[in-house]
Structures are given as structure tokens and as C-alpha cells.
Image 1: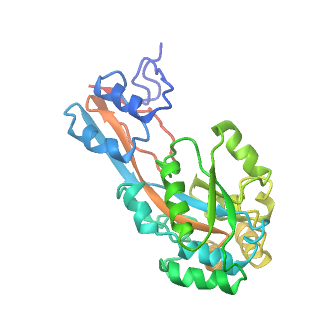
Image 2: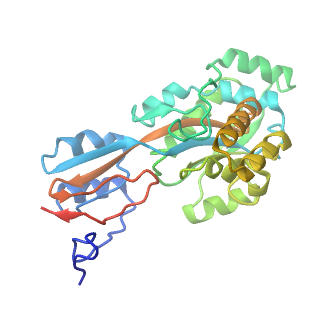
Image 3: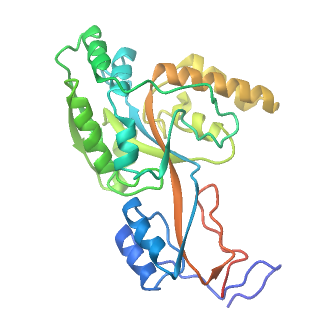
Length: 305
């Protein structure tokens, strides 16, 4: 039985109830069966907020949801094709339908709250007509076919990957690109992706306080057999992030990471989509609980009224 230790522990114990279904987690909160929950779907927020026994805590998420292009698979190895696919996605519609407005548009592979963020960059405008012209220029006037991996579960950076995949499928159909949506059980999802079986895939990331945990983790050459699902290894980009990683001067690191983000924006190994706002339902009799920036849950200093 736990007691007060160094002024930090106020609870006798913790019980973790593993509940994969979001609607079931919400129901448990309404019934008072759980004190703290995670990752409610946007459609559940209004009901949770109206419950007088629940407070819904919110903060800008330290995350990014994105679409990775496997650049080892033709024609995705062509920059013009990737530019076309990026411009053909109606990102505003995705923010509205998938995130229900509970996200901010992503421009870079890391959120604007991360030091080293390049605020000077902009997204390409949604322009399916120009996207179609780019495909013709690349030699794909009749389009082509891709396999799109869509996550089978809800994640903080993507509350509904299946809907997002269907919206991308509809957008790309307008420019002649045919999409087959493939979903693997979560345990197999990244396994198949690491083997490069996807053409494009939906994924995301929650980093920590260093830019390398974003740019290095899923865009570096070293990460191609790991979390770099774009399979993109581009020396000008990689040299910058390697130099930044070795530097001890923060101002120099910021400069290098901002240059690297510009290259990533130009080369389009991925389409970044959103930084989701994180919501966490908590019973109102819970005292001292805080949403942590890096997606973990800590209960030091937490007590029940």
C-alpha cells in the first residue's frame, strides 16, 4: 500500500483498465468507472464536456499526423509525382471531417511548439487541376495505382485513419490515381511497413524536446530500416541533421534544422497533415492531474477529492 513518499504520492494504488474502444472508454467515464481516460474521438467531446462530473482537459499536441510516400516505389520516386499527390489532398476537409476542427494544420514534420521550427515555410495550395498537369508532365496522364496503408486503430495524432484514407482516396481519384486501402492488425502494421510493402501509408509521431526526435527519427538515412517509412535518404538533408545532432550550440542547431525542414518541404517525402489538439477526460474529483507534453501519464501529486 503506497503512502506519501517525498511529498509526491497521494494514492494507495493505480488500476489500469485497458480499453481499446474509444466509445467504451467514454462510457466508463460517464458511469464513473474510470477517473482518467485518454484519446476521446472528436465526436465524443461535446457529450463528455456536458457531463457535470467530468472536466475535459486540453492542450496543443506535441504530435504530427502524416502521409508517407515510399520513394523506393515508382512512380513515387519522382518528385513531380509526389508534388502532384500532395497538392491533390484537400487538407482543410480532412481537418474538418477527421479532426472535427480539433487540430491545427501541419506545415513541417514537427509542431510549431518545438524549438527549431521553421515558421517561414508554407503548404502548397490545394490545386487538383495543377496536380493533374504535373502527372501529365511526369508521364502519367492516365494515372497509376497505389496501395495505401491505413492504421486500424485510433491514435492521438490521427483519430480516424480509415476516414482519412477514404478522403485521400476520393481526392486522388479526381486526378486519375487509383487507391486500394489496406489495413493490417496494429501489431503487423509497422512490421509490413518496415518491409516496404506499402506505397503510401498513414502514420504519425509524438516527439520530445529535441528536433532530432522528429527529423532524425522518421526522415534520416539511418532510420530507413526503422521508423523512416518514406524510405527517403537524401544526402543534403541528412548532412544537415547529422551536423545539427553533433553541434553543442543551440543557435547553430536551429539554423541547420530550419534548413533541413526547407529541404523536406521541397522534396516532399511526406505530406504532413495535422497537429492534433490533445484532450483528456478527467473526473472532477481528481486533483492535481496534468496533461504532459510528451504523451505520457504521471500521477505524482495526484489525489482524489
